[in-house]
Length: 297
Image 1 (cartoon, rainbow, N blue to C red):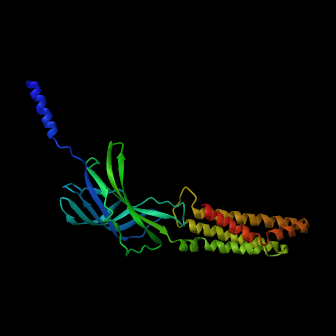
Image 2 (cartoon, rainbow, N blue to C red):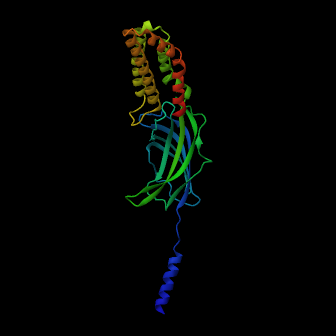
């Protein structure tokens, strides 16, 4: 009898213990200003409002930035159910340069609680109060909107999972400026080479000189382009563009050297035939090669 009463008391005690669900924190970021985006490091500065709200009393003040540090934090609202800050900080984002100079990037602000795992604090995105101020002018880039998401960050070594709030600012290079600065000079260099095919076969040494100077100019320009970005373990679109340019210049050298050799052997008929076939066809073939490059890659 006593044992039954004891078990009943234990059962009532266990039922009386409240089951604590993780507190949902509605999180929003409104960006007021953005600093220069450094492609070499992926770093940038941001000035923004951060809003955190709970339906009930919760501890939301122990957050940290996973991809940067705040240089200043001004607390504007400090209630049991709401925290509102104005924050200025330095942040870093991963950089993908495969499409350089037509690349697009994500400037990220990632927030995670310092102490409370996902079973205590869970972030919920509040898109109604989030956004990017329309007055922001970001030099060299086009602002292409924003988006937010909630991730779960697993720490396997600690056997813990934390909720993460991720705010993305999408930017991409101004395509016309990128084309004019990166590709237009190379097109003019190639134009000089293509016009050399119009010269008569007896000017073959002049044609070789024009091709040689164009190759040197292309190599120097490629080095200049490469210095704009950090070393990466893959070919960017600009690299592929220059590789095609080198291939065209190599083909030009091969054709001209072949014609020069045929001239030395007094085979003027073959030289004239090659000249007629390449004189104007290069103005069709070369642009088609570049068009395929832009369409495929």
